[in-house]
Length: 301
Image 1 (cartoon, rainbow, N blue to C red):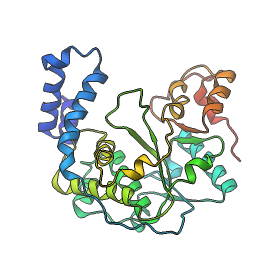
Image 2 (tube, helix red, strand yellow; image 1 turned 90 degrees about the vertical axis):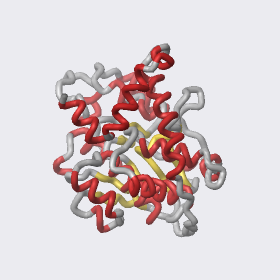
Image 3 (cartoon, rainbow, N blue to C red; image 1 turned 90 degrees about the horizontal axis):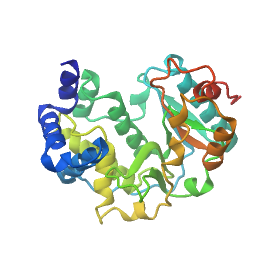
C-alpha cells in the first residue's frame, strides 16, 4: 500500500491507473519484457505531451561560457562517497581545461535561476521529486548562462573531446539501433552560448507543462518533452546538426560497480570513454575488491 500511495503522490491517480491498464492490455501481454511495455506507455504519453511544446524566440549570445554547473542539494559535505569522488574528478578536469566549477546547493541555487511559482510550490511541498526539479534547474542554467552541466554522479577520467565542446549544444543520444522514445540523456548537457533557442525551448516547454499539471505522467518527462521538440520541424535542425555520441559507453562503468575489480576491463572501458555515468544507490554492501571501491581509491589531486 505504501508503494501505491507513493506512486499516486508522484504521478497522480489517473496516470497510475492508465499505466496499470497499459501493462495488462491483451496487446501488451504479448510483449516479452517490461521494457517493451514501458516503451509502449511512453509513446502514448509523448503524443499527449506535444500540446505543451513551446518554441522559444530566444536569440543566442555570442559570448562563450566556461562554467561547469554541479549540483548536490544537500551540499558536498553531505554527499555519498562516490559523489565526492566524482566531484574530485570534475575539479581536476576543470583545472586542466581552464573552466570554473560553480557548486550549487539548495542554499544558493535560487541566486542563479528563477522558478515559476507553480513549480516552486511543487518543489517545496515535496510533490515534485528532486531529480525532476533538477531537470528544470539544469536546463534553466544553460538557457540563462550557457556552460556545461555535469551530474553529481558523473566521473571524468580524461579530457572531454573538442568535438563535443566545439558544438553549439550537446547531449548524449540513445543508439539508433535501440528503439527508444526518450532518445537522449540529460546527465551531461552543454550549451556553448546563453540563450540557445533549442535549449530555451526545452525550458519553456517544461514550464508550459508544469503550469497546467500537478502530477507527472512518466519519470522521464524531461526526455519525452525533448523528444517532442526533436520531432518539431520548427526547432529541430539544431538537434540534427549535433554530432552523435552514444550514451552506451558512458554507462559501462556504472553497470559493473558491484562486480570484482578487473584491471583489463577497467582499462578497456577507459579507452572507450572518459565520461562515466555512475550511481550512488545500492552500494552499501559491495565487496572490498569491487570496481566501486577501486574508483573510491582513484587519485584526482
